[in-house]
Length: 284
Image (tube, rainbow, N blue to C red):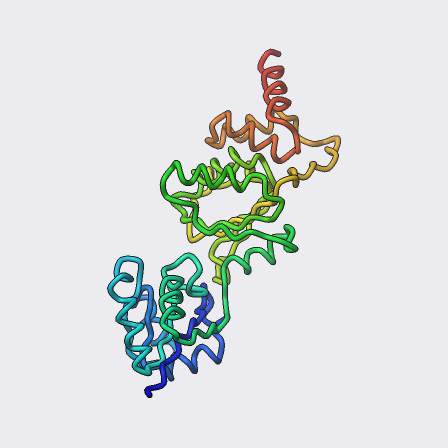
């Protein structure tokens, strides 16, 4: 009887190529075939490490046809490495479907761990890492997305989301609407040269990215239910008056409503308090 091959789930760097493991490099050289989410992207990785293993595409749009084909090759005795564009295959990509097919066919599946954006952002967030819920990308349809957010609102665990730059502001708005204003951290360009963490609350993150164009892929870490936004320290005597702080943001091009929200988040006050201070100043 022909011995079946093994499906290796190989984690690849999420940015910094130095994060690849010796084991992954060895396996990518030894297997019969590499199944990649984007062959153009993976070819660059293989070229960097001088790997010449045959490559084939396996992604969301061809998985129905390509999945059974790959299982056939595994059953014929070939070892196959599955890689995603970045990080661990099977997380927010169609790799999970191939794993299910392989297990159903009696094929051995071996995880080869490495970089992962969710955990990388979580451990550097400063938020609770004891228990957490990985959400990934929210559903695309408005109805489904709102159902998910409503269900997540009561969870006491830290929440982890993935988001693309063009949808970041809309998602931060929805998170604040359904979850309330909570401590939150946005990580982008993780492990890369311009890695950045913006820490604060959902409101302050929203204000930040309304004035700084979101770029790069984002991982959002949001505190669980019951963890309210931290109170700001007592103001120093020379602290800029609330109305002046709002006026400065408006002068910089921020809409007045958003300027009030940003100042409220920064000072640990309610929007009503800041609004009343603005109205009082305007009435003088």
